[in-house]
Length: 324
Length: 256
Ligand SMILES: Cc1cc2nc3c(=O)[nH]c(=O)nc-3n(C[C@H](O)[C@H](O)[C@H](O)COP(=O)(O)OP(=O)(O)OC[C@H]3O[C@@H](n4cnc5c(N)ncnc54)[C@H](O)[C@@H]3O)c2cc1C
Image 1 (cartoon, rainbow over the protein chains, first blue to last red):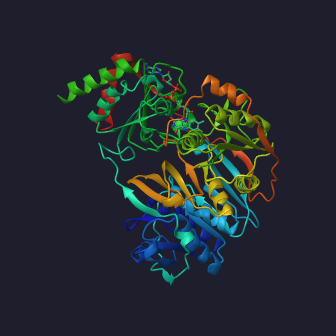
Image 2: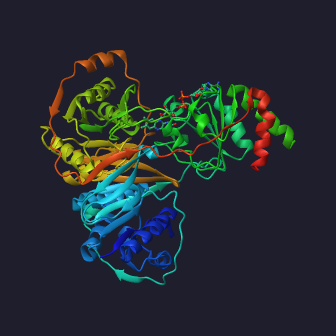
Image 3: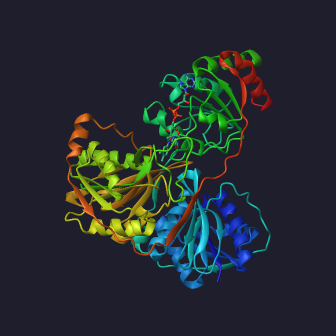
């Protein structure tokens, strides 16, 4: 019996959320007195095994095939199921990312086992495990019982600091599953590079975000100017993308992007929970809103009350004065 | 090309979420309901595909009788046929997938394209579309933000190209139909239903099926509102006159 983990990687680098997941899964394995194993899938991945050892993994089930050079969710699931058959793990755990959630859902479908996505806490019990998981993009949590053997789950890893534990080099167990054409049907066939312009939203130290209060697509010119001065990026609310003022790629929130900048400037945004779940990781939230009762104020560090169309140009002028 | 779009009725919550006394659901007393944002885009996509490639579009939801409202909303956007899997119980992911699979198998005409939201707005289980795909033996691409179809040579199989956004750009997937796609908001901008569309939608017949729950797999015990960090907002000032205080803050944060 083991705790089996799913390793996500891209271009020779283990995904940071996988390292966070391993940190949490290692705690669970220690509590349960079970060894921590990993499934590592790809074309040229043996170099990653050592790092897994640093995170407490004692055995790596390695599947290396040319056909797996690029991500293929259903084939990954077939590999995990193969290892499950051999190892009879107590639980199979991935990180709560798009990819790992996808692979684990395939594993659940292939084995007809339940799967709990994005768990925050896990309490193993005799039959069902008691988990707390993310709902509504984090606005709500759900306490639930997860049945099935083994338990299939992913861990909401964003808030967990990855911690190595140095347990030495892991044992390598080569696995050669028979992947069918159907398993490999869905896989990345090509890629398109992004149209890079400016700093990416998720890396920007400052995000200047606009909501309905900006009023129009043209209204964003001053937000762009402020973002430019602060070497930041422009974000927006769902009302803005629904009105076609900005592209959806800039939407912050539950169904958009999650950001955690040094400073988030929320201009004409009311503070709906689905928006805030995308920016609650910001170190500082500065709100500019005409309504002194707006819900976002309770979630902000600082605020200026008034019309953003007057305040933002004044702030721009003041920055220019200071830096001139 | 016949398209099925599966949607879920969810409350449209605002800044504050309160739970019912039994902690089983959001207190929706004064709230309105809508399909989840990903699903609203999936409806729009279904209508556009049916129009462009010819064929019928069908919307399906599993939920209470009141979920008829979301089916009619889909119809008012241009969906042709409506199916309600009627239940007052909250179905976890596995029973939901089983019920949808059974309903699809019970239809006279097979679907070429099945659309789901990438994850439901409320439960966020990330799995119903994938489970249905496996049960029906179809390929599935998740998180789709662009979808195109190319007719195969000599009336051969139509192939779909699905684009998925990653932090480093776009990944492209190619799959033959029939296939399942889980859609993400941003693939299109959903239309606002027209008045004639709303009137037409009111008269659409609804196929009603009563689904069986069966084994749950994942059993909700209760919902919890996470404790919010208390934040004492510091009001820097009012209007344009507050600009110097803002720049002072920016300087403190080391940004200017
Ligand atoms: C399942 C689900 C998922 C969702 N996902 C997202 C998501 O990912 N991202 C998201 O943003 N939303 C999301 N939403 C929508 C969300 O609930 C809100 O509807 C939305 O965030 C509101 O956008 P807003 O704050 O721009 O608009 P409003 O709520 O209309 O607020 C506008 C604000 O602007 C202020 N204002 C107006 N004029 C001015 C002015 N001249 N100067 C200064 N202030 C002014 C007003 O006082 C008000 O506070 C989701 C909803 C659901 C149901």
